[in-house]
Image 1 (tube, one colour):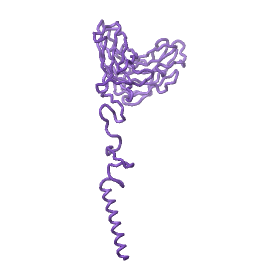
Image 2 (image 1 turned 180 degrees about the vertical axis):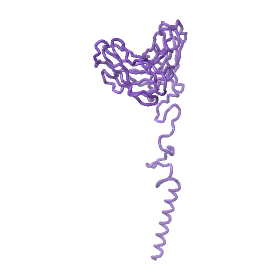
Image 3 (image 1 turned 45 degrees about the vertical axis):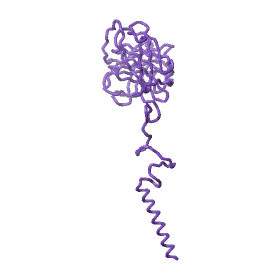
Image 4 (image 1 turned 120 degrees about the vertical axis):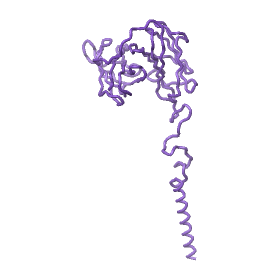
Length: 294
């Protein structure tokens, strides 16, 4: 009887060991492979993380920038003329369908930047959202020639993105100005002395831009800058060919001067034009600089 009981115990132990080894060979810990810790089946890739997105969604369910398109219509489809009111219509689509909702980003649903080909002309305006993915605004181009239009927006459920378009304006062109790095990074604009400094200047490295703003006459620091679009200021940066665009927001949006600090990364070596925009005594002023990034 004792021998029979001993043999039964040995058989149970052997069967349990075989079952455990089989589970290990199948790739599981103590359960079947392909199961999560809560016992539900998971399709997550072997390396962990989320499954790949589908359609026009990114892995977190947001809208993919590559799938978003902007359809531009100027002057109702006619040839736009310099020094005339020109309507600009921008329809934002995702996968061929209008995007219905946009987040308010720095007090606006869309920022529209307009620059001339030589970057001598800069205009920052805000089209009105009409619904069904359509933004509209009327403006004037100061001279004939080519202009880059840059629509900057945040679709609800997506991240900040921009769409660009070159347009040609009929009329007498302005005299082209060469894009050359400034010998001095101090300028006087609208009674303000503005100096731009960098903690370092190198491509592909995060760096800090610091604007120091003083009264041009007294050299006294200006400490009562007003919020512009919800922040102490805004900075727009373009490569000299206007093909790469950066819209930079301040590190401390609630600062009031005299210093305004911004953080960015220049994507490559080369010449860039930088526009800083600030507000003082209820007036917005724009300070342009041209730099060369090693």
